Length: 236
Ligand code: CA
Image (cartoon, rainbow, N blue to C red):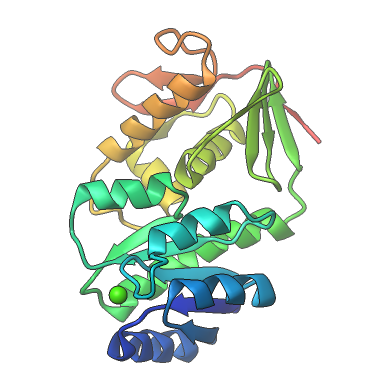
């Protein structure tokens, strides 16, 4: 796999170790050590992916960088590095728009697997000539701009909520088990916590469905998993 990765990490030893591992896989890597440099570099170099440490010196931390990058017109995938193993931080990171997170200490195999999974998803959207939008009922999904509207009103989705919605909507009527969805959407073995899928589906329903208790789009298939309703899905 190829691409340019911006690594934002203030600990020189970790930065060097990650850089070496990524370069060995064929990636071009640019390293910066604080949030301000990170934002300058994103604007200048438009990397394919950002690996972003949460705790950074100099007043602009990883979460702020994440927020600022998400306000940019171009979608750049972000993997957060965090030293804290607390669910709250993970959730906050993902809610703010990180595509994935990895907790220190990590091994390079794990990191490379996550990098490749996130990039594969981003590249497949950009290059396979898939339709640019999906429309079903009042729901419209802009696949290239990664935005969703319901009845013309924009809806805020996290990256994983978006990916899950798109995956299901691209296969209307097909039932997927939680494990399959984890593998397809999260792209790696998500340590077996299939409740993650349930949580994301519930959030999507609250955001998209007129009546989340009687969903029209995201349907539960008892004891199996979920499917997107087989209504007419228009693509173009
Ligand atoms: Ca740090």
